[in-house]
Image 1: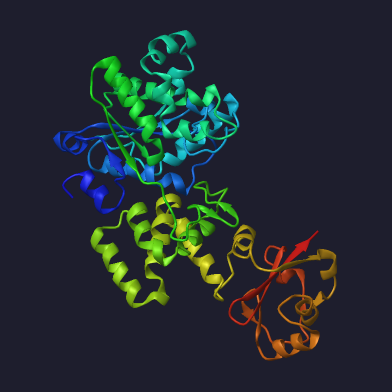
Image 2: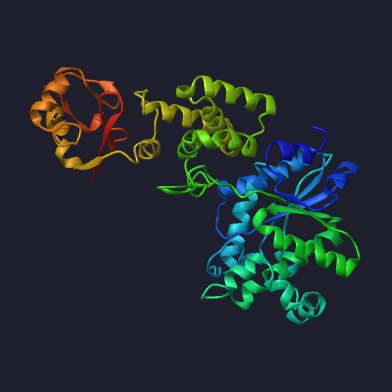
Length: 425
């Protein structure tokens, strides 16, 4: 690709941009920033489009800034929100900023000599700015009419709860961020999700009015799913980038379960794969849909990008377990993740004392069989596996030594019918 705009266009990532931006980016290297509000201690998969958008801009030679909203995070962005955000304490915001900085470092190159990325915290200037100075120097440039015409404000005003003055002022704070970065980092472009267009244009307008210079904006599309449900949400909750909040295994499974109607779009949005490679995956998937080759490529690429090669390999091993793969080497956390959604029951460790529990009795107490007689027939017919190892010994006793880390026993009937035994102290 000749420039990043062409790259964004074929990937479907260019939702809107200021007139003249394409020519500006072709002329010479520009400084571009995206803001990330620290409303939590982890970013989630919905944040990946702007994060990777910034990374793509850097790969095309531009200077990029990830702006951590240590100041604006004290207020909260009303964009796309139906009601007021819960205000965070300063300590919470600072802790969240620290966690988010570490996550951003996985995507942006801070070491290159050509155009190293920067992470800057807007608390550095917003927290020390006096209210009188802000109202006099910034607020005077915008009428209330201008502000209530913005979609993020207009939508809230029309609701019964309305919008507080606190959140109403957010766009001015973000606009001031743009002015500050324009003055101190020679930043002429702000990027973000399409819901940020109103905030971005406010910053552009402030730069024009206070400095007489033209600033630019570019926004990426908000992600939607083919079935209309919210992207990044599952029955078990939000898919986070923090491996302690969403394990690499569950992260891998999220992408692996992508709908056929979404996978081509997601390959373009989220991966570094070339146009030719994605087209080939489309062809392969159409010819062999049962192999889900595009979904596997998406899951591999995303897990590698976010969590690294080792985590990807672990996630792939764990995924094979559901299809009868070897369980040796898996941790208690792995077992808990893999079998989180299968039927389970609990047994006291004391019941395993002595000779242990009769294999047939343990099976009969699960939903895998309807009776002790069916349990006997299933075992004798070699249809039951203990920790994915077939066992047809009807007289077998299971002891605590058969449990994974003394905590779990996994019973399987057939290929994919599982029951998890949790062993309690």
